[in-house]
Image (cartoon, rainbow over all chains, first blue to last red; front, side, top):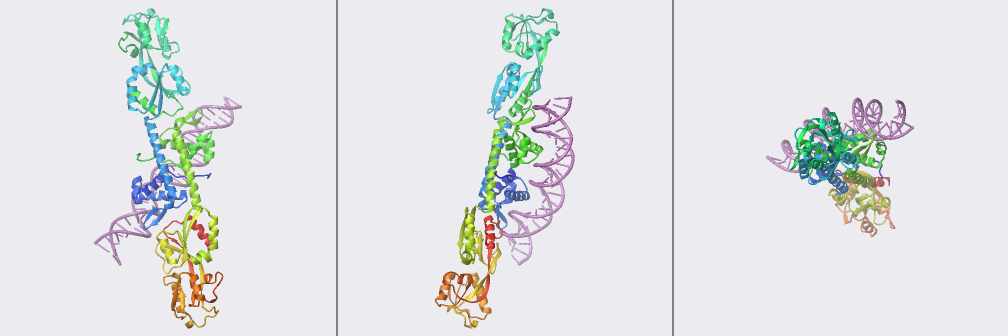
Length: 289
Length: 289
DNA sequence: CATAATAGTTCAGTTTTACTTCATTAAATT
DNA sequence: AATTTAATGAAGTAAAACTGAACTATTATG
């Protein structure tokens, strides 16, 4: 094994290929976009580095020697490989290629960003998007262990190590009463409640807000699924606090009593990880929404 | 087709391979013989040029991302190709392989350099040597038109354009009389002659020398082949002037009357051409002879 | 045959790039 | 908390690549 390889640059190899494919150095120089002088010097440097003469004088022009075929072959091959690599990089960069493992809470996947997501998919047909919808806690865990590249979730009380977040949007949470009334009355009379489960990120914010308002927090049913909570409210099982976009979505929207609180949806990614190219594009698409 | 390729250098690709094969950047840096800082900067530059992030942070170390496999593959491939090229270049430089088309006049090929040639062949078994033996004029023509890489011939009266020569050795030309006498007697009584043909380089020198000595130049037979001329002398057909190494070679050497002149053998090559590596070695071998 | 045009190189000067050393940041270890 | 280690950043320097202009040698042209 040779201890040190000649430090050939792609540029120099391009010069060689261009010269092989052009009648004169001047044309070759134009083809690669440099002055004839630069081409000449670059080729001289290439010759020096390879350590073998590549050209014969023929009148006032220089022609490639027949026995430098291996060098020219090498140049062509490496230039072609590099073109392939550049293509791969371009596709990767533009996100038209590869895989994006995306986690989203339901409100994001459906109400907030459903349309943006559909459009993004359509614009990047070669990008395999794995969408995982679930509670924020699950998403963050999967993000940390590398099962996801990117997640849209509720801002966590404490950010897990190795995860960085950026606020995407703020949304309202409103109180919905079972009888459809618009006025909730004094807070002491609110409830009982059907809420998101205890471990849900949104739940703690809701409970805190309710307590601030002096409302009793008696919980009679729990679900991660807002549709389930909505239906329970409709059935008169209890009161709920829900994101307005979910509670007032679809055929039978609930009637809002009052805005109780707000929650922030954030984009989360592994802080060490290189920004996923497709992920960056998607973030942009979501923000523009 | 991407208009312009990233100008990756072999060095940078080596860095990448070294990092992939080493536990830490510091070890990789040592392997390629640069400072860790240089390695870090070089890889950053590589990343920038490819346009794709290559590493993930993992604690305080950086590890290659799984999805940069294409880049690493590319690097390995190009480095390997370059190692091959370097090997080829080394062999070519040392003249251990390839082809050398060599022209020699008979005296050089047989008497002067036969042994050196045999030895050179033995020392470079992979070098395909095409030996073409012929008159100097023919050799020079073939040298000019590219059919030969190198020629050993008699110094021409006028050097053809595009050919450069270097004196290799000087040898004696002697008069040989048909009856084997050692004393040629007065020059007026010399001849008639059996000589090299008119167009031979050596012939003009001989004629000039004879005229200077006042000898009549009546030519009764001509041949390029010294053995033929020798035989004619032996047969009593006439006198001759021959290189002593040829006239006094073999089983039946002629008996020399007198040194008449000298001729110079030269090494000739195309002046525009790059020095043929094997050719240079051969020149050296011939000189040492 | 002189003259102009052409192909390529060399030179001088400028900008880029790559490297080394030293300092700094941040994570792992003691 | 202090130390060690991995990697990066900054400043300075040496090497390299480039441009434009001058130059050499060859070929074409009036």
